[in-house]
Image (cartoon, rainbow, N blue to C red):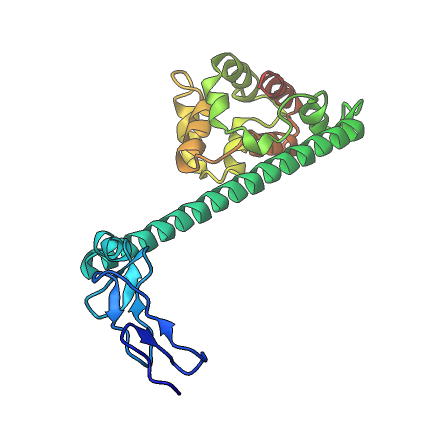
Length: 248
């Protein structure tokens, strides 16, 4: 192979010597030799300190986007904590929504059940004046049918109704059970009943009994009172209580 003159090279891929490529010193990586052409960076590149070619903006981008290791770690931790917090809030909201729906459905089903029982009782007891329960359940449509929900305290709070009950239940009438029997059904001792009647001129025995029962068991209901009245055959008192049921 013919020796090339200065400014020319032949790397063995050509028959004749080729002119060396010219480039500025800023882009020059390697000078031309007789066996190899000049190595230059692309005009859109620049010569890096390590003797390689890089994009002109690459070094600046690295410098401007470089973040201290400690700061980067804190940022990553904050992002992770933020995601965990959002997930926790979403889970809590989902539980609250599901719980609310569940409770609402239970309430609706319970109301439907009570309405159904009320209608059944109306059909069973309507017209049966000898059945004490007839006075409780009859015509309770659109009213409170579940007497377990009415506290006994309501009887004490209704002064007019309480007075009516006192007038029919406190007096000792032959062959008619009265407040004495109601007190016994509630489990009060004979001495307590005798004492209550000993001050009848000043204070109603029935009121004393009801106040005692409510103080000992605030959860006592009108239903329990009605059951006792029915057991001792005082349907007249049950009729009086019917007024409160219909009002409520």
